[in-house]
Image (cartoon, rainbow, N blue to C red; front, side):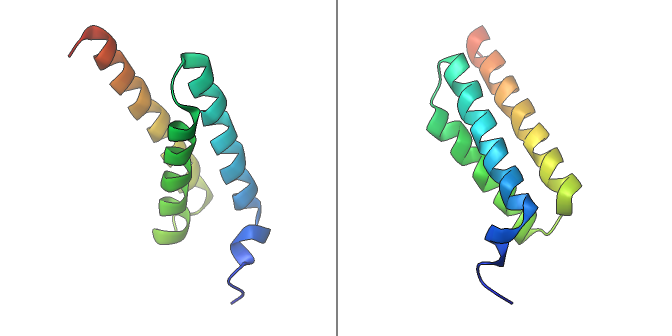
Length: 80
């Protein structure tokens, strides 16, 4: 298998789109865009390449990351 085959897939484009979404969302929230987009890339690669979950798993992991970031921000805002 070509080691660069991952770069020629549609899932790689989705990975970049998710990273861009998280970067922009972090900017809107006044947080580190680099941190949020790096978390998105790590979670996507973990579910895509390491766990081989496929499309649904990759997208659900991004939703889970969004929910996790939301919970952490709410708890921080409340001082917990």
